[in-house]
Image (cartoon, rainbow over all chains, first blue to last red):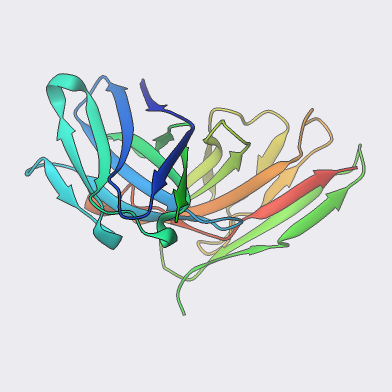
Length: 113
Length: 114
């Protein structure tokens, strides 16, 4: 069984400030981890993923995430927020031999000018 | 252009009626999924299919049905047995192998029960 917890359903940041979204997971097998972004009334789009290898993963739009096995975490960061980053972000986990994703509850990001 | 097409985008239904949501993909993906999204609850898996003529229940399958007669198509029927059907429904597809988990999503269908 696997699960995902995203700390904070809403995050507010100023334009140009650091964006940090927290994700912790549980998985009985080595996990594959994902971050997706959703803009209003649209489907989700893949930001980045971790499968194996380097634990710091870079994605689109300047986002990156670090897999920390000891902390069972996969936090998402972006050094400098842009107004276009306002969206909802979802962390997801899949067992390495699995065939379906389990999503967290999502974190909505508000960017203030 | 390759992608996932969901229709209709908005749908209103009276209580007691079945409705069918369409999902078509031209990405040649083997796996297809239906998720339900409610505010604050993330995405919950309803059904998924990895191959034509085969599908599995997800976490919240009660009150829903699906079919997979063609690789490109994975329609979802919301039946009158679904107690609280008002929600945003998302269809997705993915390839097998190393890219499994990289889901491509449609733009969603918003169902409202009147």
